[in-house]
Amino acid sequence: MGRSCRVSSVAHLKLLMPLMLFVGISEGSPLDYERWKVLAVNLEKVSGDAYPPTLSKLEGMEAEGYLVVLSASKTKGIAEVAVASKALEDLTKIQADGLMTFDLLSNSLGKTLDLEKRDAGENLPRASVTFTSYMNFSQMSNYLEGLPAQYPQRIRVDKSGRSFENRTIYRVRMTNNITDTVEKKVVFVDGGIHAREWISPAAALYVIETLIANTGLTETIEWQIMPMLNPDGYDYTWSKDRLWRKNRSKSPSSTCYGVDLNRNFGFQWGGLGTSSSPCSDVYKGTSAFSEPESGALRDAMLPLKGKVKAYITFHSFGQTILYPWGYSTQVKHPLTATMNTVAKAMAAQIKKTTLAVYSVGNSAVVYYPAAGASDDWAAYAMNITYSYTIELRDKGVYGFTLPASQILPTVRDAWEAVKILATLV
Ligand code: 0X9
Ligand code: ZN
Image (tube, rainbow, N blue to C red; front, side):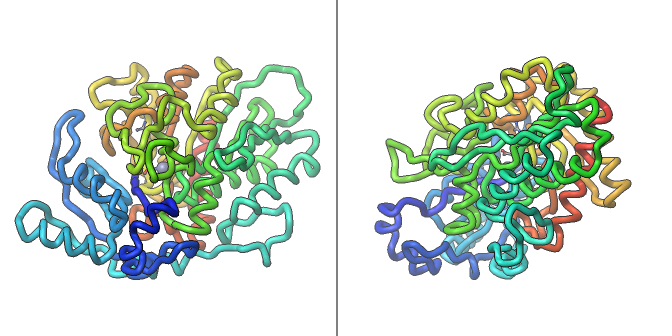
């Protein structure tokens, strides 16, 4: 789990000219993380819904643009942060004063970025899909738009909404006979809520591809898949800032951009683990569903109330299967035992097939409480028993910038989890 506030608006960039020279960016060119380092910062042990003071401090520092919180785990007791040398100096002073301790995890964030392979289109035929390199948004759109013509009996693709910057938010519907009027249960899958978690949309696309090949699982289930919920943020991670997390909506009250879509859903909106500051990486927005992207998911799902038996939202990283409630450690979902059993079944299936080890738990307990997320909203407003956030690979070696060689093994984890879930609902 991670958040950051990046140097964003042009106005902001002008104010921060010295910073830009320092971290090696210039207006229009991408933010250069080459020399950034990655640290593991130790967090205080806290009980209940308390938030470690060190984590609050790190989050406060993000707005300055020299530091990005990549993850924070209560069970591990550490936050992983990417730092420019200015932030490293500041943290070193804080450490010398005995107020914080950290270890160096990586000397160069740039090295991990080099292992990502971006297919800029030269090698990928139009309207096709690949899992050996990352696809950009326009490649994904071409692939999705081409699906109904290839599989007219089985696939419909709707334009379920438009992003703040007017990109299409697609929904793929798949079943063995799309014109069949028999009511089927629905399994709903999404990806790409957080822009920088590139493996997430890839996993959702892999679910589509695998269902095309395996007709069995579409006989009794209608699948609804929204593989890219935050196209503006995703595009921005390709062109400007690889570690951008939020969408790209313009705040009327600030020079900062973006709302954390996973804090913008209409259940416990604005509660713990959210921020009212537009510069924060966990900014909740001006109201529940203020953003067109979270609204698109709500509008696609709500008419299916009663039919959706399972909801899976792919994120990264951490190799963890999380279940509600995520907004507080103090309120236990009445179906916790069932949710836990099924999460364990998914983790066991992954272990058996791909050998990857996923841990399982309540999100507020394993991470920290975070309100207004899509999983809690789906469990509450849609009354879905099996509502899971799956944090895909890895465990933090590469984090968001997972090498292209790990795309296929990781999307297989995702498929195995979804497959076993579909057989249980
Ligand atoms: O913080 C998040 O939004 C998710 N982690 S991430 O690193 N992908 O950003 C976890 C969300 C867990 N669910 C709830 N807290 N409801
Ligand atoms: Zn995420």
